[in-house]
Length: 150
Image 1 (cartoon, rainbow, N blue to C red):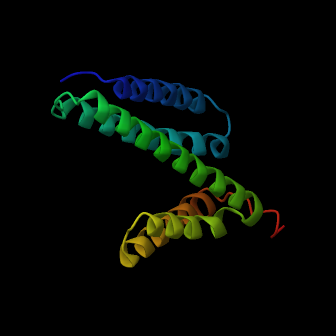
Image 2: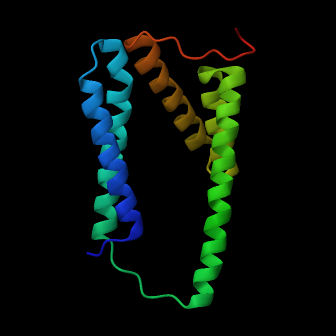
Image 3: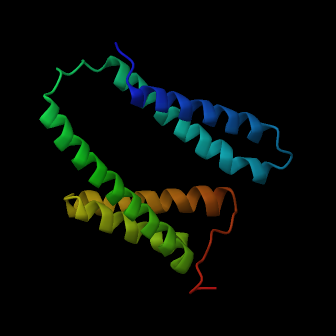
């Protein structure tokens, strides 16, 4: 069990989420504190699961320097690709709104990454239903409708 640099990053994220949760619990209004509590809890739980998986994973054998350079280049391209997807999601939310963008984004992202249609549609429907139930039905919050639909 050896700590990696990504383990320290996960710990930092978890510390930030604990701070977010503690600040959210001190907020006066229930509607105000629900979003940070829900999202902070989810991120904290997922961070703890990933940290546990990293700590329990077997150490991989040391790679040759050439392999590391190829891996770094590939990882760098993946980071920029993911950043592009996130920026396009944010722009789409600004123009079309959360409920219209969420299923379209999930379908396009998963299909571009080679997932089956059945899995893609199930994840898109499940995520959209989750967002609707939690934010619109339970919390009774108006999500951003987009510049085109206002």
